[in-house]
Image (tube, rainbow, N blue to C red; front, side, top):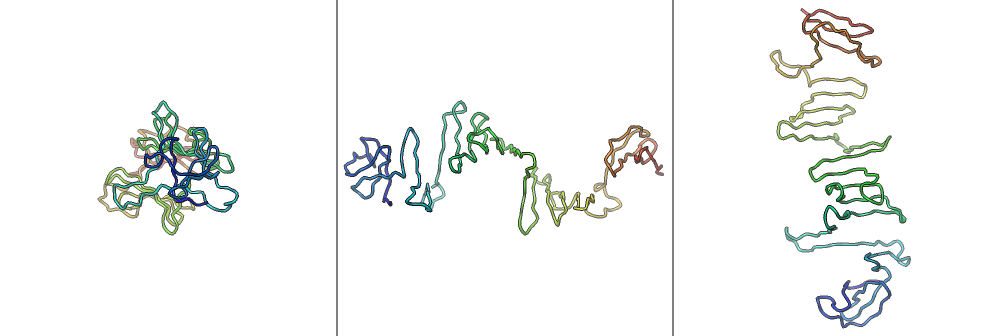
Length: 260
């Protein structure tokens, strides 16, 4: 059933503030609609019951779409199309949207007023329960993944990149290029790489003899190493004795070489 316009009014005031004078028919809990300038009718598709509007596709329209649309056709920068969900205050309820399949809620998305108006994504009928992701009003983003789940970043045909913005020269990047995980500085220069084969490569190449940065730093101690390092199979720890100028490696016991 198609209608030229939709109007909802009180029993005494009609569209445009005028008393209704059109004739028509309807049904209990149905929202009245103008099918033309003088005729009122209704449809079981659109009902109002106990403070709930329902817009339900009928079996006769099986396969069609049910659409709720807010349009602003004015071509002006100050003209917007706004869907607003409003609650009283932080002591009130939440303003959120529920997404359901066959009557069962799959997602809830909206503002959780009980947690300082945090924007929340929950895999449940209410916010704050089975929360997957949240964003605070100060910009803190939290993602909670269940055991065995992944957070995936995909960029087809190019290098997927995460950018950390610290302001100008303090920016840094993480990316994956040809299977190699890389850390890059603000200028795009590689600082550290880890290949799929397990190689860890520091820096971006050779450095000048008078360089002041670009070195690999290892831990030092003021004397001979005596502790037993935590074991990691197939790997050995290093430490530099800055008092005696010895480089130590642990392989069941500390082995050293004196550096001139």
